[in-house]
Length: 119
Image 1 (cartoon, rainbow, N blue to C red):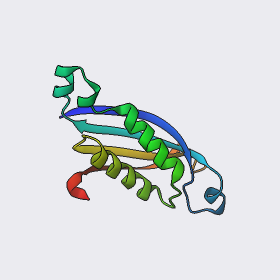
Image 2: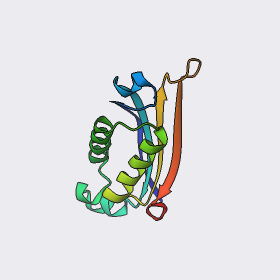
Image 3: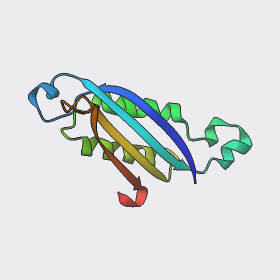
């Protein structure tokens, strides 16, 4: 299976359980490996036949900016669901990280792998 990779998509949003996290937007780092068959797009050279990573990025940015989840677990699952059901992706590995969430760690995050059958 072919892969479309979106690396280090940095979005600002509300996420977390602490009072200050509920009002102040923070950095959220998103990485995705999206599994799809790209052969048709390679033959036709047409964006309509491709996994449009610009459209995916815009959709995910919009979702993160409008959501205000308490848990990273919820957000990472929402992102996987979006890419699997709104785009021609058959499997998705999605990682969401909160940079600086722990004092002595660069970031904390959750990574999941899902297919449509998981929902």
